[in-house]
Length: 229
Image 1 (cartoon, rainbow, N blue to C red):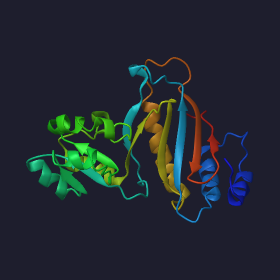
Image 2: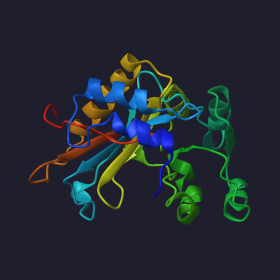
Image 3: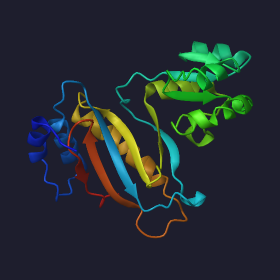
Image 4: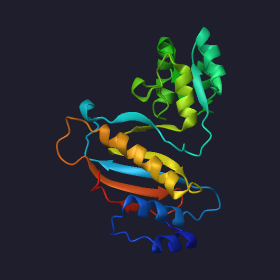
């Protein structure tokens, strides 16, 4: 992949052989985010887990103290009183069966998170093939299958993010925007890492966290020391 001049200049500031302390890494990622838009700062965590074994799966959610800097659209599957509750809590879309063809046949996916009450999971299950691959399927572990839709919506809007292993056993999560202060990014990073460390599967033998890389949307990756975790 060929990178432009700006990337080349930014990459010179990063010592690829060095493992930076989190605070240094955050400062460096902010400095190397030189695109014309407000870049997203992401953390990529390579684990020693083997996601093919259910007992080594990592999945959960954490509320970032300073949010993600992104406006998140929430779709809620609910019925009865829960529809009003979801609307009052600020859900962007609320519905039931009538949304199935819209998503399945028309490819409507104008939302970032899906929340469902347990009694709607039969309906939502029919969308597994569409929502599953996009990581949008509601899940009790992530707090997105719940009767307390108001709390779920409030948490998501406040900056709750989901983390899970991908096929290569890496966790990819946003921790804010390049416009955030270093302190805000550090607080978000610390909250995420605390949740990841806590989520360590008891079945795992050997090293849990193999590498941590911080990067902005268009910038070079900065390696973070895993020693303190």
